Every structure is written in C-alpha cells, then in structure tokens.
Image 1: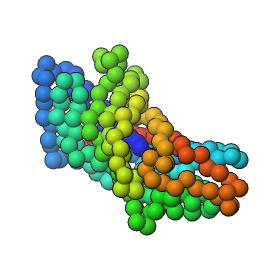
Image 2: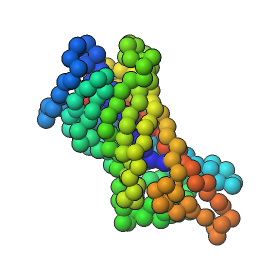
Image 3: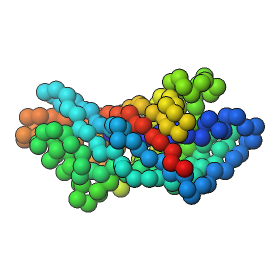
Image 4: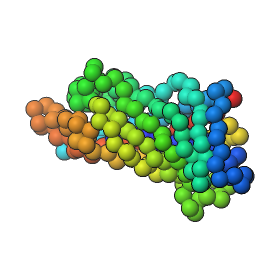
Length: 208
C-alpha cells in the first residue's frame, strides 16, 4: 500500500559521491534539509468487484535533515523518516474514505511511517548521466498500524537542477500483512481486493 518512497531520498548524494574514490564518506550537515515540492504526488490505487478506486495521500510539507554515510556504492541514511497522515487520505467517495480510515484505525494510528535505510543505483545505471532517467533501489522500513516490514523499492530518478531531483515509482502491498482489515463496503456488496498499490511522483529539493 503505502510506501513509498519513498523511497527516494537516495538521489541526492550521487552527483558528489560518484566523483570520489573514497569507499566511505560521512555527510552530516545539520543545515542541509530535504523538502518535497508542492508538485509532488502520492496516491493509492486498488480494485473492487465493481471497478477501480484511487486515494490521494497528503505529501509531507516539512523539512527533513539530510544525514548519511556513503559506503561501497550505497548511501546509508540516518534518521530519514517520512510520515503520511492516515486521516488525510482522500478517496473521493465517502464510503471508501470511511472504510479505509476505519481499517487503518486513523484515530489510533495517525501516521504511516517510511524509514529510508539505504539506497543505491542499479548496476547498469551506476554511471549514467543523472540528467537522464536512471534506476534506483531503496531499502526501507514501512510501518502501518504499528506493524513494521522491510521493503525493497524500485524507482526511477532524474536530476532536474543541481539541488532538485524527481523520483517516481510504485509498490504493491498487502493490507493483511499490516493487519488492516480489508473493507467490505455496503454489507459486502462491494468487495475490496487485499492488494493495493502505492504510487509516488516526487520532486525533492535539497535546501542548504
């Protein structure tokens, strides 16, 4: 379902890191932060026995400190967490909104958390020009309703400007894996499938 992600903050170090011969580099600058631009989008898609549905997620509008170590062609991140509000998920239909938030227990669990652990370019994208789309892989922990699972997420990235990147992708998740009760809407007349897909198309800027 949700995830993702972000996955994502892996893009920032590469322009600098790929031009060094050091095997391990620490980057802990308390003045550098990550900001999601207003044109970023995150949303869920799923299926029922009567059709498809889409639920928009609110993109975090907060600064996230950028701290990482670069080790063996991987960026290993420190305390990079993105939170998605469960109460602000919008499915554009009252019945879907009610049932999804009920399944997520948004009053008890107000956020879905995505922790970025490490990220790296795929082998064949390692030396590609970042002004072209390249493949990136991120290792994350996703927590929904207090249940945490490790997820490896595949995405594509591109550098828009020296301090701005765009990253997009999707991740399929099982609601049951996170103890989310699969909604049965209108007394079971509308049956929702367990799998849900989290989509992200993020513009991410580094603020020095």
